[in-house]
Amino acid sequence: MTIVVTGATGHLGRHAVESLLSRGVPADQIVAIGRSVEKIQDLADRGVVVKRASYDEPETLRAAFAGADKLLFVSASEPGKRIPQHQNVIAAAKDAGIGKIAYTSIAHADTSDLMLASEHIATERALTESGIPTVFLRNSWYLENYDLKGALEHGLYGAAGEGKLSIATRADYAEAAAAAIAADGIDQQVYELGGEGVTLSELAAEVARQSGRDVTYTNLTPEKYTEFLVGLGVPEGFAAVLADSDRGAAEGALHTGTEDIEKLLGRPVTPLADSVRDALA
Image 1: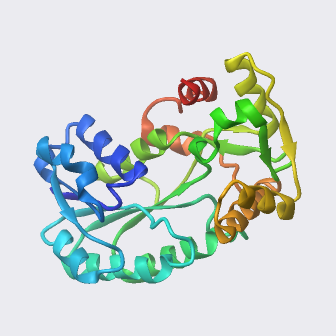
Image 2: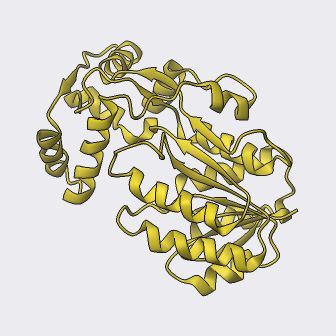
């Protein structure tokens, strides 16, 4: 039973490979793919099959998927380019006879009006139309989206108001994804995944508690938050996407509860206090 993990040279994919190994999946039954395979040479040294493949190069995907049974499809990282890239992945998976896919989507993709959601729902539809049995892992927000160490110096900024975000770590999302793709049978096609629901004011307060520093949250309009992010060096297009995500979060678009992630993890989601402590270490 061979499992391919796309995006294994990125943070989430790498965590997922590690989680598969920790779950007892034999290393030689895991195929880790990505563009910069030098980043995962250590996985190859441990027996994982490492192959270079790019979402933009269909022939590399077909070669990487050949003979595989399952695919953990980590969504591409460049908003605006995902639809054609994801279509390449789906076509290659179909050609290879992949029997099951788990795809990392976004919270409430089918009803969300977030800018980020449009490419995910297009991908979910394409996967459904492909006929390949697919589990949709709709991840909410990542703790790593926030520069918590930077917040010690300048505070936490955003545009989410008092909306609750179900924030979890990459490691928890990756472990849930590994559980979903490794299982021979799970009872849901859609999992809405996220950690504890907190406002950004509450996140700032937790950073303050953990650090002993005065850390506050400053709420901006989406437009001003975009300007703030651009001032920090974030490309304008991506800054607008992040600000729009906060705009949606203020309306509940990134609140999921913890029930689904805990089903897959088989344990409670990592407490926010522990995650913040580790992020500040």
